[in-house]
Length: 407
Ligand SMILES: Cc1cc2nc3c(=O)[nH]c(=O)nc-3n(C[C@H](O)[C@H](O)[C@H](O)COP(=O)(O)OP(=O)(O)OC[C@H]3O[C@@H](n4cnc5c(N)ncnc54)[C@H](O)[C@@H]3O)c2cc1C
Image (cartoon, rainbow, N blue to C red; front, side, top):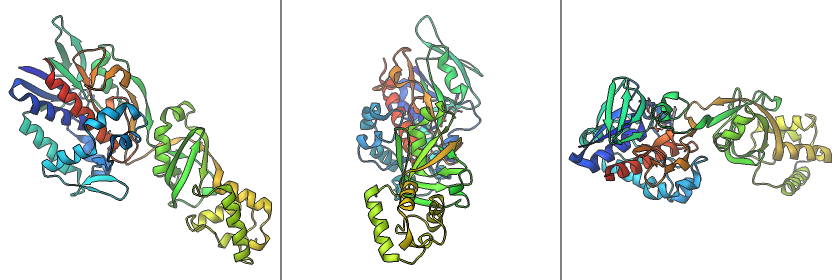
């Protein structure tokens, strides 16, 4: 009987173990080893306890565009296991997923327990066994080619090992295969918010703007922006942090952020809007009458002040210099970022097993036969919105198929 060891009882490990056991039937045995006292802990806390299982994307091409690490190399992966496969898999087990207006998909129960119960039941039915408080220290290759998995609870011989140990911020995640010579890309955070202390945002905490473009160097992202007590957050900022994870770590998170509060308007259109407002509003104060309803009143007042426009200035007397300054504040405000804070709802690690060292058709290591990888231990991470679980399901599924087919 073939022995398959899955290291890590998270989303990727469970999903892979279930499929592998189903495919092998009585020809094999699948055992999950988990160092912690509990299984599926991140699934439980994910999505604020609701578990954002996947994201409504119709094609692999669209899906890959949300993965700063992985990106186009994941075309094949998501063609084989895309969003619809995830939806169908859960539906076949009685779990209906609903789509929120931004495309995030959750169980209709709005509870991660539904997902945990489904995975646990499917694993039990497939004959998967597990052991908690069983950390894997390292793996050795025996003379006959078999693998010995050395755990805190003794040694286990395996024909194949799936490493699904999660983000490599934890040294434990790398431990099992480091001894076999696996190299890892160093870990840096992804999905974080920016710390900045700028008088223009003083007193604006809690204010949000629906569509903002943020830029630093060649990196740019768009989406809602939220002013927080420590700086700026929101989907636009998180996207920029994910795409810039390595670059921003290199500058120790100190950089200039360019903010365009009106990305749908160009400089010429803005000037026209100012001139039209000057004619229409005449004697009304600039600070009280904004031509763009998408800019909240308090932000408008703050940007007028930053442009040097005295509070009592009327539209009829707006100067060219004020128009230029206000235009710069609206379309290209420069803010000095002085650090980062992690997003409390979801964060993932950039770094892990380099994709070039893995055969993405099987998830087997190119250098260490019999060792497979799935989930966040790989150098794959998506932006916020259910993409990280989608990658865990997909890579777990592909690894499971390859392991089951092994001679
Ligand atoms: C607060 C929070 C909320 C999130 N919400 C979402 C969300 O809603 N949607 C989404 O798509 N993503 C979300 N994510 C990201 C998502 O949870 C992860 O990308 C996903 O859990 C990765 O799954 P995994 O199985 O690869 O790793 P993990 O879930 O981290 O599982 C790895 C397991 O391996 C075990 N392990 C590690 N080393 C060893 C060892 N040497 N021996 C034995 N066991 C070991 C660990 O204890 C762990 O249980 C969230 C993350 C956080 C932190």
